[in-house]
Amino acid sequence: MPPRTTDSTPERPDDDRAPSTDPEPEITGEREDGARSDSAPEPGVDQRVAAVRRAADGGRRWRALHLAGCAVLLAVAVTGGAIAVGGVQDRGAGVDAVSAAGALSPGDLTRGDLDAGIASLQKHLRAQPKDYGSWATLGVAYVEQARTKGDPSRYPQAQRALKRSLGLEPGNDQALAGQAALAAARHDFPGALIHADRALKQNPYNERALCTRIDALVELGRYDDAAKAADTADDRRPGIPVFTRYAYVHELRGDVRTAREVLERALSSAHAPADVAYVATALGQLAWNQGEYKKALGHYARALAADDAYLPALEGRARAQAASGDRKAAVRGLEQVVARFPLPGPLVALGELYEDRGADGDRAKAGDQYALVDAWTALARAGGANTDLETALAAADHGDKKEALRAARAEWDRRHSVHTADALAWALHVNGRDEEALPYARRATATGYRNAVFLYHRGVIERATGDERGARSHLKAALDLNPGFSPLGAREARTALKDLEGNR
Image (cartoon, one colour):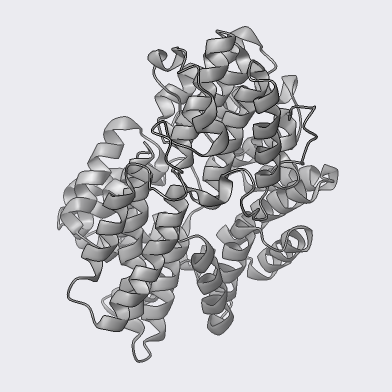
C-alpha cells in the first residue's frame, strides 16, 4: 500500500463562466487597464504593506526600517514582477521548460524550473490562445507557484486561467481539477471536494483530482473517508503524489510504521530531483515528529542534495538542528528561509528561537517576525485565501488572544480536523476558558496522531482544570515523543511537569 499528501480548495459554480476574451492579463502580466503588474500593485498590496507599517508603529527606527525591508519583499510578491515574461527565474519545484510549439503537461509541474515552464506556457498560449488544456495547466502552475513561493497573489491569476480553459471547453476535467487545487490552496475545502468530484465524474483517473479529494477530506477531518479515497487513488493512479497522501492519512491515525514504509518505497521510486526532495522532506518531517532528529537530518540532507534551494527541507533542517541543540545553525538557517519567503511557520519558529536565546535585541527581533505573520495573512486574504487557522496558531502565543479565539472559532465552524480542534483548544486556554477547551484538546488527540504540540496543549489545559494526573501523563508523553518540539513550549512543558512532580 502507498502513501499520500495534502492539498485542496475550489471555486463556486459561477467560476465556470467564460472570462474576457482578452488573454493578456494572464499571459503578459498586464492589468486590464494596461498598467504593468510589476509597476503597479494589484488590489491588496496597500493593505499588506499598511499592516506591516502598523506593526512597526512605536518601534525603534532601526526596527521600522527592518520591517519596511520585509514589506518591500511582500509587496514584490504581490506585484509579481518576476513572473512577467522575460522576468527573473527563481529556482522552484516546478516544470520543465517547453518549446514554443508544445504545451506543458500537468505532470511536468513536478519537475524542473516552474518559472521557466510558466514562461513557456505563456509563449505557447500567445500562439495558440484556444488551447484549453494549456490554459488549465497554466492555472495549476500559478497555484503551484503560490504554494512553493508563499505568494497568494497568484491565486487570482490561476482563477482567470482556469476560467479561460472552461470557457473554451466547458466541463474539461483538467480545469475542474485545477479549480479543486486552487480551492484547496485557498483553504476552501468544501469547494475543493465539490470540484474534485466534478473532475472525477469526467475522468475517474485524473491524478490531481484524486489527490485533492484526499486532501479536502483530510482537512475537513473526515479521516475514514480520506482513507477510502486514498485506497481508491492508489488503485487508479499509484505514484508519488498518491503515495505521500496515503502515508499522511496513516500518520494521522497513529500508524507511523505504515506511513514510513510507504514513504520509503516512494523515495526508492523517485528519480526526478523535485520528487526526491519532496519525499525525503516528508520522511524528515515524520522522523522529526517522533523525536528522531538524527534520522530527520539525514532525510533533509538527502532532500537538499537533490535540490539545495528546497524551502521545506531548509526549514525542516533548521527545526531539527534546533531540537538537537545546534541553535546557531538553526537561527542561521531560518534567517535564510524567511529572507526569501516570509511565511508564518518559519517566522514563528525563528521568533521563538530569538526569544529562547535571549541576547540583546532578541526580543525586538522576535517581535519583528510575529509582526510579519500579520503582513503575510493580509497578503493571503487579498489573494482570496482563508487564513484563520494560521492566525489562530500565531496569535494565541504571540499576538492578540481575542483575535486568536475569533479565528479559531471561525475555522472550527468550517471544518473539524485535529489541527482545528487543537487550535481552538489552545485559543480558549489562553483566554482563560479551560473547561471549554478540554473537550477540543481531547478531540485533537483522539485519532492517535503522534503530535507533541497537541499532547503539550492537552497537558497544560488538564493542569488548569485540576486534572494533575492527566496533565502529568500528557506533558510527559509530549516530551518523551519529541523533546524539542518547540523552543518555548518544550521549556514550559518541562517546568510544568517538574512542578507537578513536586506536588505529588
